[in-house]
Structure formats: C-alpha cells, structure tokens
Amino acid sequence: MRRRDTGILGEKLARDFLKKRGYRIQETNYRCPEGEIDIVAAHKDFLGEDKEALLIYAKSILETQNTDYFIFGHRHIAISYQFQAGAQVIFLGDWVNKGSYAEWDGKSLTLKLLD
Image 1 (tube, helix red, strand yellow):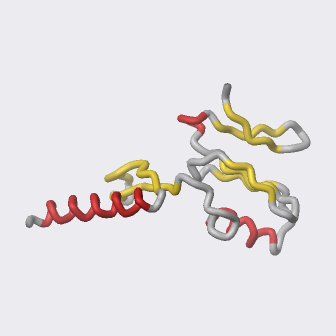
Image 2 (tube, rainbow, N blue to C red):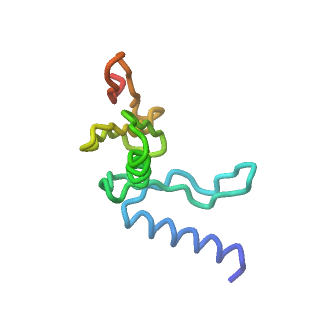
C-alpha cells in the first residue's frame, strides 16, 4: 500500500471512530497558514458541566474572579447554562446555519434563535 493510500485509510478510520462516539465531522483537510488539519470535529451533544471544556474553564475563572457572563462561540450547539453561583455561560452555537445569537437588553443576556 502506498503512503498516500495509508493516509487516506487512516483518516477514514479516524472519521468513523469519531462519528461512532457522537462527533460531527465539520471539515476535512482544512488548510490554513500554519499547515493542514486533517479532521475538524465537534461533539454534537452537551457533555455536562464536568466534561465540557469551556464550562471547566469558566469554573476555574470563577474561583478567582466574580463574573456574570461567559460567551463562547466554539461549540456548534446553542446552549445557555446557569452555574449555581449565578454566572451564566452561553454557547452561541452555529449562527450561520442555525441562526442562534445572544441579546443583551441592558439587564440580562438571553440566547435567541432567528425566526
């Protein structure tokens, strides 16, 4: 088997592995100035407070700072999550395809979807 064929097979096996574990393949062979990323994938479901990397990060900030809101655009699911301490985390989701966005009314931040 040629080296290129081995690489193609390896990427297919990796995609299949990720899909079986609930990940959604967003892009393959993504080229950027730094090089190429073979597979860009995101988990399609909310993993829970103790498994979502951005929630873990927000909790670590709350240990040293009083913060009311965290807004992230890194996850392709739109979620508003309230910590017991009162801080709110919003994952803006995929606004291009799903129309999700956050709105500040001067008092509170709300996750919304385009009609």
